[in-house]
Length: 417
Image (cartoon, rainbow, N blue to C red; front, side, top):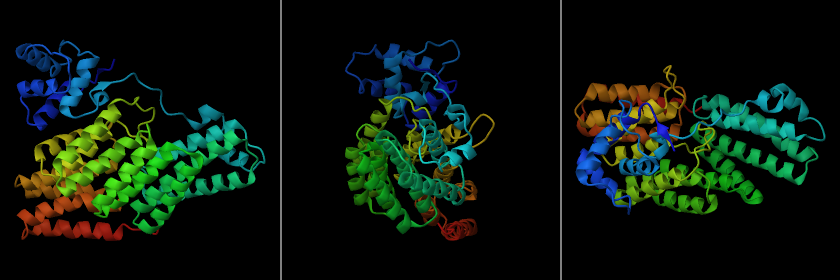
């Protein structure tokens, strides 16, 4: 059973209000998510109010009610109620007794030990976990260097069948990482070639995760390119290939984003709910920083994009606040800056719709000030803010200046990938 997050009560209330529900309406909505006969309305409402007072001696909901609360609010259960804590991601020296230099030295020998392969696995995990925060132009250099080493090792080293498959898997994750970084840096043709290599490698070793992420990249490319039907097709193919890998959740989210942009709200809601249920039934990930692991908090990020685009400002603003909180540690350090960037855009759009030009521009400037960016994604999400500014403040100098700043960032932020 999950335990209450210290922030659980605030989050339950914020999400309820963000969805525009009274306590009574939330309780009635809860009944839609279960076949079980729930308590009488007055009793259930008292329970809900107690859940919004957790930490003040209120009763803690059981596992069944935790899932019902989460379903009612449209979030993953573990973002409200923490699962048993996992151990921290493995450290290279702790796992293998070797540092990076020694691992590199051992790659030069004819026979490779399992300890060396363990070291490579931890190294690839570290690189994939750096995606969200390390500048793309820096990370891609290290990613390509390791990819070259592993490919050379595959060609020149004596390996057992199991070792060869393990090494091919690590190469697959690195290829996916490099492809994502190439696209972030504004090199779509190169990224597509890299994606196809990952897809062929995934087919060769029959790896559902690598196959699923290769399809997810195709969906992402299509989404940022405005090819929404192609997003649906790529996502459906990816879900079939991914089987029970968590990438299936992100594929559902990409479909939801495409449906939002096509104005198909029932399909958007259906895709969001399908992804939420999938993620709710998966084990809590050991390393939530790995780009190729879908962590529960990321689900707020997916939904935020959809609700921002369809104009549900209240819920989009609530989710943006949650994304910023979930991406920032107790010391104020941001570990997922690109999520925060899109949250700032969302807050800017809501402010623009509410007549707060200065606030809208301030949020927009925060969104483009960070060092870690994905240029295609940034261009896509900031279009919502540009549209809001042009619709309501076409002649305002502050709005014009911001749009010009954005154009400069998007045009100058394309180093050679």
